Image 1 (cartoon, helix red, strand yellow):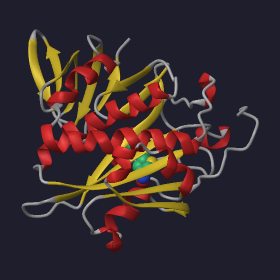
Image 2 (tube, rainbow, N blue to C red; image 1 turned 120 degrees about the vertical axis):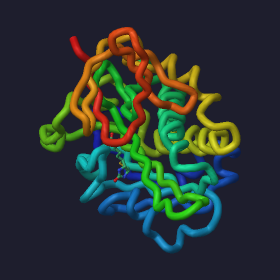
Image 3 (tube, rainbow, N blue to C red; image 1 turned 90 degrees about the vertical axis):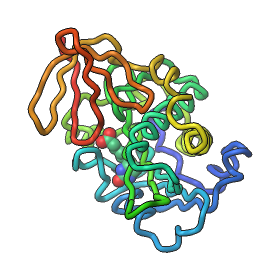
Image 4 (cartoon, helix red, strand yellow; image 1 turned 60 degrees about the horizontal axis):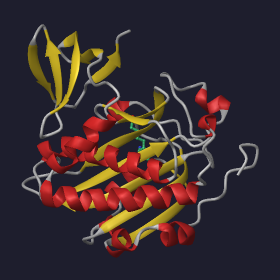
Length: 270
Ligand code: BTN
């Protein structure tokens, strides 16, 4: 498809057909919406998604798309991919850090399967292409008590961001079209779902450890000088990969500090 043609409409049947048989086996529902406030909220608060198994929502547009750290996720209609996956986990909430990194590996594999070269990951949840943000991952849970926990994994990927909408994004961003990639949103959704559903099942069995090597191969900040901002202020260090739980290892003056996600932001220092 050339970048001048309108994006293909999302189609539930086409997405379903493109999902691998292994991933489809665990799928309970796949909802395609014209517009929703947030596909994450839709699954998290929807009463009809209580049944065990995987529930998916894909939306053409979001009027209140949610990003990390309370930021909005710019979600114009018919342009990009906005997708959420609901699944129940028995693991304790601290494990969710590793789950979000495992999902990053899954999204990178989906991109590679579509011949998109050069994807990198930026801890904790950014998907980069050519050094700019192509997409992001937001995990939300309605965790209460001892679990099991309903976890919604939201994934946003910029496919062909209209210039006007892109102008309101407050960080360097890119889209697939700018890199000559036009996979089609239905095919992209199918590939991402095939990988993410599989990765979540593997994570439920074995945790983050089995994803760690792949994550470190994709680590766009490895051995780079970075600046970290959190509630206690900002500090600089060298990014040294992640530990077995997915915490960032930051070398500061020769000592290694373990940083857990949360209200943390990270930027590269040039
Ligand atoms: C980030 O800030 O990097 C995370 C962005 C996550 C955006 C996706 S789009 C689909 C899903 N629904 C939402 O409201 N947010 C996530």
